[in-house]
Amino acid sequence: MSSTACSSCLDSGAVTALASPAQSPAHWPAVASLTMGVFGLVMAEFLPASLLTAMSTDFGVSYGAAGQAVTATALVGAVAAPSLPLLTRRLDRRSVMLALSLLLVLSNALAAVADSLATLLAARVMLGVALGGFWSMAGVLAMRLVPQPLFARAMSLILAGVSVATVCAAPLGAWMGDVWGWRSAFIAAGAVSLVTLAVQFSTLPALPPRDDPSLRVFAELLRRPPVRVALLAVVLVISGHFAGFTYIRPFMEQVTQLSVGTISAVLLGYGVGGFFGNFAGGWLAGRSERRAIVFGGMVIATLAAGLVVAGSSAAVTAVAVTLWSFAFGAFPVGFQTWIVRAAPDQAESAGGLLVASFQIAIASGAIFGGLLVDRIGALGGPAFAIAAVTLGTLLTLRHGPRTGAPA
Image (cartoon, rainbow, N blue to C red; front, side, top):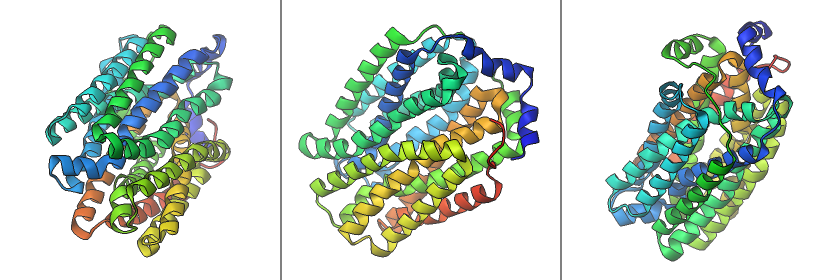
């Protein structure tokens, strides 16, 4: 992306929107409440990956069918991300965020009592609405809650919720599912989301709407080549990642032949790797989001190939799963920075498109990965990851933003 293309986006309105938060004090408790929201959402989103075997057995469906619990959330999130800022453009953002957190509570409660796959999918649809709306607004709200020089620090704090959730969700979900049944994991997630709602209610200040998103704005953003390239790279890279991650438990059971206890330990390694990967990825993205994404993509494609070739080895699988999560940490901050550079004058709308692309990618990974898993076995997930992540990495290497472009 050229400096001229980005500079032309910074009209007087954009400069005012970006600069105005610098005149107000930082609201760190409110930022922390957004971190809790991210933690609760990501925890609920990732739970099916660690509970897939138990859910498929309980409902009497295949792994691929049970994996569509991820697809349902992602598809609805893809629609909700650009739609909710548009539908709620006249509402105070505090009220909108509280409503989304309440929807998260209801989603977890419904999932915990689901007596069929259809009911579970309905709960996951509710989660998709909350997820898409929350992520589309989180970045621009962080921009309003702290002075601009502290924005990167605020976003790192918010994204730390992703790191903590990846540490907790998969291993705890697998352990709780084995000890008390898979529903207990959603009960725990519901309790966390209820606490999050209470904290947000007490800390979030009034946030009157500022942007005026519209279909015309979305159309104008999609006409910008840097935006289109960023969104396509997201779809390719993230779909590959989630094809591998969603079906990692069947892989460890069928190919590596690990026990439930060992699987929980490996998933804990995945979470720890993601925790440190978030900070390492943020550090890399702060210097060059293009290089951060390329680094993460190259590592994941290599690890997926290692699983295909030597996944029967417990040591290879454990190391690959842990490093996979570490490498993924380069993507959230990297793509968020890329889209802000591509559309600084329409941060909320661009954020909605970015989240929609993420959710489309997650759905694509779950769908195509599930088809491959059902047809050729557990190796289908990492096989899809190799192809999709490699294509997205090459696209980013060739057309990603260059160091020095104005943010």
